[in-house]
Amino acid sequence: MKKFFIKICKFFGFEIIDQNEFNSPTLNKELNEDLSILNKKSIVLPLGEVKITRKVNSILIIVRVNTEIEIWDQNKRRLFERPKIEYTIRSIKSLINSIKLCQNKYPNLKIKTIILDSSKNKKLDKIREITKDIQIEIISLETKKFENKIQKQKTQETFSNLASLLQCFEIGKDIGEDLIFFVEDDYLHFETMLVEMISTYERVSSQIGKDIFMCPSDYPFLYMNNEKTNILIGDKRHWRTINKTLCTFLTSKKLLDLYWQNFSKNCEDRHDPFEKYINEIYKNEFCISPLKSLSVHLTNINSSYGLSPFIDYKKLWDQNE
Image (cartoon, rainbow, N blue to C red; front, side, top):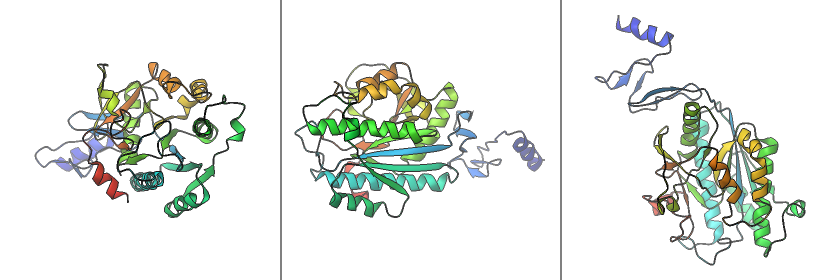
C-alpha cells in the first residue's frame, strides 16, 4: 500500500515528507539534501513547494577587468594590500569555480562568459592562463567608440570606467537571451554563489510573478541607516530587499531592455552616486541581496561599499590563491 501511495503521489506531482525516516520517498532523497528541481519546483522545509513558472534557460556572465587601477577614484589600499592583478586573478578563479559547480549541477543550463579587459598584454596573459580550462571569451575595451556617447571627464580613468560599463551593457543587450550577470573584478565569490543565485531567482520571480534584480554581496552600507526592508526565503538562505547596488548585479534581458535608457544614461557622465540611474530602477523593480553574502567586495576595510559582515575573509582569499 505504501509503495502504491508513493506512485500515486508521483503521478500527480505531489511530494511526501517522512519525518520519521527523515527522507522524501517521492524524491528518493534525505531531507538534508537539495530537494528542489531547476525549472520545475523549489522546496524549502518547512515552507513546502513553490511551482516554478519563471524558468531560467541561460545566463550570460560579463566580467569587467582593469588590472591597472588599484581603487578607482580613491587613494586607499584594499584589504591585504596587494597589487590589483592579485585581486583580479583570485576573483576570476573564484568565479570559474562557481561556474563549474553550476554546470555540474545544472548541465542543461546554458552558460556563456565574457571578460571585457582593459589590461596590458602581459597581465592579459595571466588571465588567459587561468581561463584556459573553461570556455571564456576575452574581448578588449573599445574606448573610441564611446567618445560621442560619454561626456568629457576629468581623468582618462573615469572615462574608461564609464566606457567599459557601457560596453558591458551593450553586450548584454546585443547577445543576452535570458539572465545577465554583470560582474566586477574585485569580488571573491563563494563556490555556491551562481547555483544559489539562479535557483533563488526562479523561486522569487515565480512567487511574485515578475523578473527581478539580484546583488550577490551583502554590503556594509545596508546597515548604516534605518531603511525598511523585507526578508525573503531563497533556495538556501534568507534574502533582503534593497534599493541600491554597485555595478555587480544580475537581472534579465527583459529588464535590461525595459530600462535601457537608465543603463545608458548612467554611463553618459560621472554621477553621484556613480550608480545613480541604475538605483532609480529599484524604485519600481524588486532587487534583493543575500544574508549572508555570496560574494565579497574586496576594497578598503573601512569602505561602506566593501567587506560583507560575518565572513572569513582570509579563508576565502587563501582558497582562491
